[in-house]
Length: 252
Image (cartoon, rainbow, N blue to C red; front, side, top):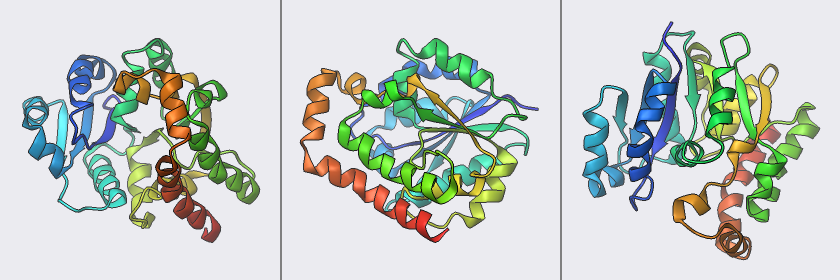
């Protein structure tokens, strides 16, 4: 059976993450057998250098995304490619490249490596969630709004689950089986995936899901955190995916 594969969408119109992806590529190759990556059209247009980096390396399985594709459909397409190409028992790691870029260049690298390497077919699926220490690094509006969904799930299902998750480990065959029933076109499709596995998925809270933005933006974490907490647009952005997530939980 092939070693685990990493799966992440790549939307980087400002070119902020692309240099980090280049730097961490050797580390990704040590940890994973392959990377399934989707590229948005604006990223392809503005940053041909990252396209070249990805396409010249057989480690990356690259899928261009059609212009105007909604974010949930984008993720669905990428996950479908990864699940269909991989052996059913192969472990897939759907996650986010900005998080990976931070983790693999931070004090959290060793613990991250240890945690993901302890996951095998017998204890998957595992949903890595943010520990209290990790959440404490995030702006308060991020924390409290995303926990609306977590708390609703506790009332509805009697389990503590992260419905706006950052890192999942799941067998390709299981993901392939789930995807036909994932129908939402926005970020709440992540919650649909969790709902499909809620009765047997395991949660593991980790410090390495610390807030990544200060690192990527080269900003003081305290100042940036205060800015985000006092910015109504940031609150609206969190509500834009948590409200549909709550609606999804309510009808399942």
